[in-house]
Length: 140
Image 1 (tube, rainbow, N blue to C red):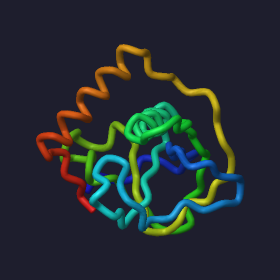
Image 2 (cartoon, one colour):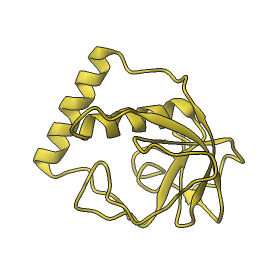
Image 3 (cartoon, rainbow, N blue to C red):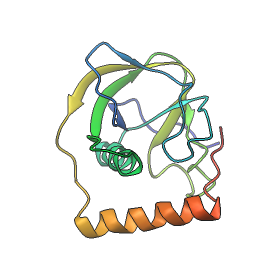
C-alpha cells in the first residue's frame, strides 16, 4: 500500500449532528451500502472531499438531511483507504484514510465547494446505477 501522505488537518463528511469533543466510531452501516456494517471510520485531508461525502450521504437519506463537515483528529493508527488507493487511483490522490480507532471532533467547517444542481443530479444517477447493478464493493 502507498505511503501515508498527510499529518492533517483531517475532515469527515456526514449527516450526523455532532459537537466538539464527540467521537465518530466504526460499527455503523455504510451510507453507500446499508447492508454493510463498517469496520472503519473514513476521513480525508481534503475538505471538499469530505463535503462531497456529506452531500452524497444527504442524497441517500430520506428526509431533509443536512450535510456536515467536521474537522477530526484520529485517536489511533490509520491507513490509506484501500477503496480508492491503488484500486481505483494510483497512489492516494483523494488523500483518503481509514481507521478502526475513533475520530475526535475538534471543529466543524461550513465552507466547502458545494455541488452544482447538475453535479448533484449526476451523483444521484451514478448512485442509482451502483445500487441497481450491485457494484461498488466496499473493502471492509
